[in-house]
Image (cartoon, rainbow, N blue to C red; front, side, top):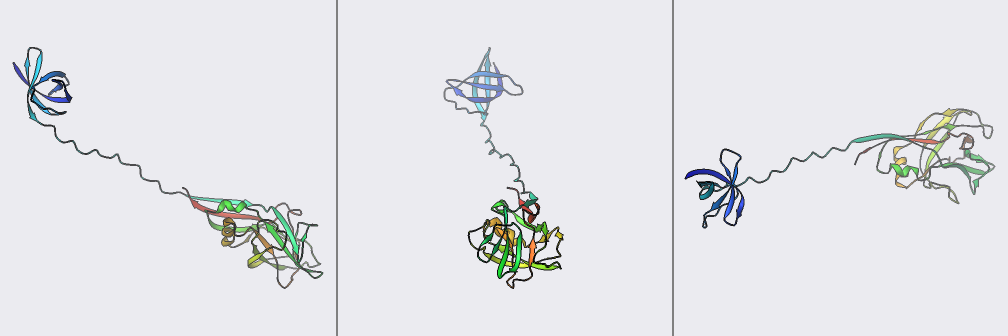
Length: 245
């Protein structure tokens, strides 16, 4: 009879259990004494009689297994700063002349003619709502072209207003804040004129939707090319940035 040391593999089934013989990979089936309790990974001594194995007693119980370690999770990627530049063409250019919209031209008039105060308006629709979650870094109006009107050809400055409506209303446009506009001679085309970033924020939020040329004094008399006269008239170029989700 030989005494062999081994390690329990699995659990006891009936009166037998699997035991891996220490120092090797051999696993044998051994009889377990009736009153002996064994558990997986216990170290035991076995007696071998002929080709049969008998678990005589435990040397020691299995060491408590350490708590499972969590696999290190991938760090949450930092949001990436995305930048872009979008060009928005007007959906309509039109002039309001005190009591009605001029439908004979799409040009934009500022000034008083025959007692009628003109307001030239550029409507952008709801296009700029696409920038609602973006930070506006620059906004500029392009394609400002001055054409002959009322016989005034010298350089004259307009006043630019933010307009609440994003499309032509039935009545007068609603003007809010204003800035001093560009000064152009007849025939000149201004490649770019900055407007407040906050105006684009208002358009993105749906609180505004257009721009207007208007002077409360009715002077100077200015006419800018609209969509019908100049296809690239009054385009709004916006530079923006936002964090990726």
